[in-house]
Amino acid sequence: DAKTTQPNSMESNEEEPVHLPCNHSTISGTDYIHWYRQLPSQGPEYVIHGLTSNVNNRMASLAIAEDRKSSTLILHRATLRDAAVYYCILRGGTGNQFYFGTGTSLTVIP
Amino acid sequence: DVKVTQSSRYLVKRTGEKVFLECVQDMDHENMFWYRQDPGLGLRLIYFSYDVKMKEKGDIPEGYSVSREKKERFSLILESASTNQTSMYLCASSWLSPTNEKLFFGSGTQLSVL
Image 1: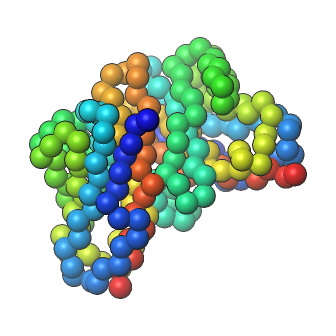
Image 2: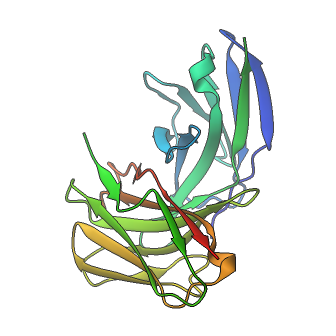
């Protein structure tokens, strides 16, 4: 089963960019890389996902290494509302499982 | 908006009780999932289902069973609740298609087994 590793915690100043790293060295060729975030007292919510190419949406950007063994979620300007636990996930295995790691707790400093 | 609804936000049960956690989604999703979330351990997959009456074990199925009799409803069953099953339980659903596969989560059920 494909797994991910992330730093336990990170800090960022408000309105500065944040780069959240994820390692997934056992990724297979058909695994999609997903990012979700979980605000306090809520279920996780989708942020972004990609396969090989870098992806952008209104929430964030996803940079995927050429060998696909790592990726980085980029929040262009952190706000206090971005304080959450960010999960890097691989969609793979049989039957479309989503395997979560332990996530990175992001603190945004005003 | 997609809605994944879990029947209870908080639940308190006694050791040995049979516990049912219900989850309903309104987007006709094929996939449904049950996770538990514990401090320091992140989210761990218990069971998932990709169709009615189909189920597959996740990472930690021991002590749990599931039921999917209708496409929109996925139930997690604790046959005989134990204190080590005290946890936050999260239900999720998604499309089966590989190009449109976001997970949508419910708000979670905090289960306490005394």
